[in-house]
Length: 161
Length: 80
Image 1 (cartoon, chains in turn brown, cyan):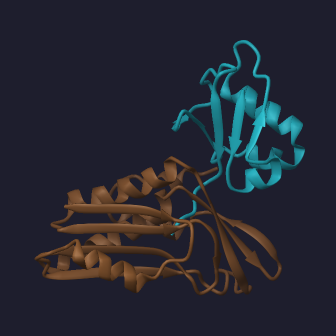
Image 2 (tube, one colour; image 1 turned 30 degrees about the vertical axis):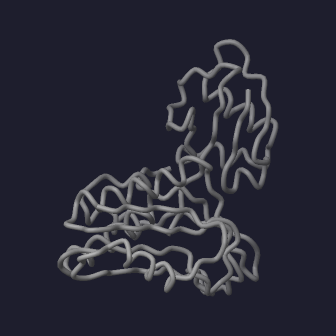
């Protein structure tokens, strides 16, 4: 399985990622992708101008690789990819892109869903929302942990303070 | 010793600070020392969800840390 995981320091183009990914997945019967976009409003409704994603030089890329490799091991895939932004991300810009190519559609859909649920709680990033009412650091929600638990492995973010 | 901070802690304290760990120091001692030096970060550092990381592995509060060690503190992650 061709697995790629990358931390992107600048804006990326999901269409270009898909084109390049498809070339690495010869013989696929289907490609599923998900693009996460920096929302222009917070959970509470305040306008968000931009996000800042702090990251770790070694653990961040390693965390993306683990998720992509686990998807490749778990589902019947030909290729898997994760691209995740770091640094300043303007509202409306892509923040994450995941892709899975498989002989059949179900594995591709499931792998994309699985990678996103894992990334929400395990990708080594610290996200700050720069809102009109000030800057706020974001933590994983119970909903993120519940999504993660669908795949029946322990959620590292669920430990109560 | 070098202590690296991430997320909100990096904003309050800076990415890296140099501390004198002292003989027999453990993670909990470094956490306490940081809180005293940077009171603005004390509430965050006091949370059990803010984990310590030594040589790229999450470690417990009783982990000994020498002056050669490079210790990091990680607030809860938020990706995706």
